Image 1 (tube, rainbow, N blue to C red):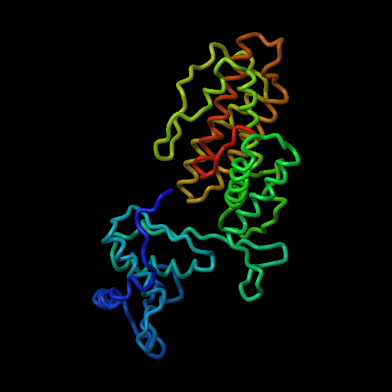
Image 2 (spheres, rainbow, N blue to C red; image 1 turned 120 degrees about the vertical axis):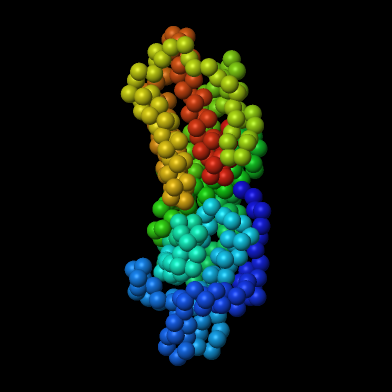
Length: 341
């Protein structure tokens, strides 16, 4: 992700408040409310609470500045969609703002979207700056890295690049934990849920990828290279060209079929992310892929000496496809996929 423009905050729109009020007046939208306040009635579009845009003493409020900002952004960017990533407690506010914009200029209709999110809570309750129980993201990421490093030191002390892997897993754990939960609902943050290696977590999915790469390295014959990223173009990873196996023999087992089914679900999951502005469908699909691979790995021996060549080839090809799906999916979420854990 990169940012083309960083706006300067509310003060940036100060000189546009008067023109915005003038435009609302000319459109015939303003009426006088209690104590001389200026409001816009929205009952005709199903919103019972009027939108307050100016207090009785003439001072502006959030609504005024949000309207001015939207008008500026239309002129500056001519956007396809404008997303407001703000908490669920502001749902009514944005319903009002968008309704006013629709009345003011039909161009806005369907382009404005509030993507609300719930609050992250601690086990003891809601965070509060006054109570001093607020956790900063930087501290969370540092703690995640340290906790993962301790687990690695215990389970695989000889792992190469332990610091780099700890960084991948720690960051991935926090990002994936947030994505796995419906963004609209409040979530309770506990470390056991975040960094677990055997639950619906980032480390669990990352471990599945690392395990596949281990299998491919043991297979030799250039199999591991087929799961390596060659280039990155925007959100897409490019892998080496790979031919389908000459036979599907070895993939008839229910576990292999289940894994194929989950791999085929990636495009639909990505489309759901775009439609809903929420990473949860992708996160859950990656967990489903990782779980299906676990069943496949257990019940369909991949490198067993007794395997016929065509069985071995087909099962390794499915491993490559699974590694690619996991890596691409994690990449879309901003998470790295370690090759060893």
